[in-house]
Image (cartoon, rainbow, N blue to C red; front, side):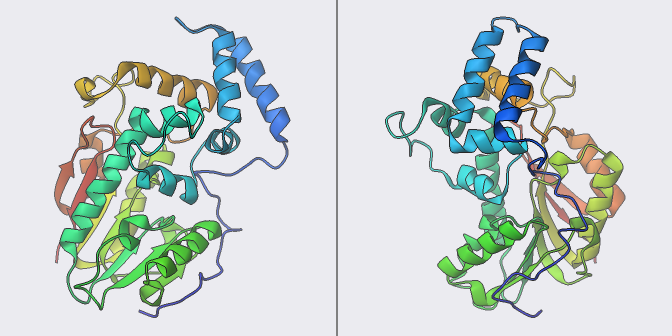
Length: 317
């Protein structure tokens, strides 16, 4: 597979990013006014007044990550990378705002996705063998692959696919920092219609299915991944599980989840931001979708709270 030191220009204009993107018709001030109006009309929540909700909105708006979330209702490659590579205890309330501190240090979904990132890296590191081709879709900044140890694997090839040109640029920059740019090929393509066919040994994918509510579309995504892999290839992916308030089949381990932080998360992500990453699925649903797509030897690795499980599956020979 040909390596490239620059992202390939592609079809971003033909497809729509489902994870983030600002509405160009509205200014930021208008956006805040519309959220304040929506919160006021919705009224108080049990134990949380409208005034308290608007104060949280103002706190979000005062920090860079909060503003991005309010504008986009999702995360891009840069902010995802910042959240998953952040070291617990790195910040203090003296160095960042109280809102930023609570997002990075306390919110259960953030802690779960950071733990998921660590599980991905463990699984991927264990899969490394000489001569393999590894890919990430959507790649974002590609930290789950670019931060692995390749000292004993000099002939590994890396492929990143994303619709977001900014993500591809960021992946290239990180690859250069890691001394891996000469192994890297980047493609601006849609995950459902990738041009790769039977070329990848190990494929990793995180953060796309959680924005897609259509179960048939997610199964189609897994079929695309199946086609991309070589026979015997491995998929490492993940999914968001439903909270107990939405499903009796919720696997959440509430003993591992701080209730105060969970309540704050609900206020921020659901009530105020109206985050797009709300496509929850159970282990059984995910298993059925992967089996439908052709995968076998499917195993789950749960984070402590069981919010964001990792899945490892194999394409049969």
